[in-house]
Image (cartoon, rainbow, N blue to C red; front, side):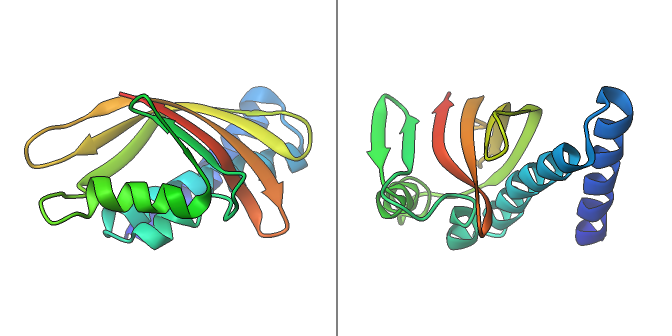
Length: 150
């Protein structure tokens, strides 16, 4: 069951952090919550749920997204860019996965995430690296900056 597997992954990831790195309980919770943001984004993407995917981003004009030699500012502009790129008439969203991720807490309310993405499409399989900055908000951890390179 995919949901059960995700819960198991989160629990295993939390235990690994505590045992392997001696991360405190609060830090482990933050790492797990950040990992969950990306896991939830991949699940939403793979269902074709772009609004669900966008829940991982701060819904603000502060949001910045750099990719393909283009800068996008603001949540709505980022959503519009994703729609144009992946949901236009001749486009597809494909299947998204993340790996090689590292999460580094930058104090108590910011984090840096580095990793690799893989996108399986019918005609190609783009892959690349990304750097995210997340902020801890009352609604949970949200991406405030995304720099993705192919």
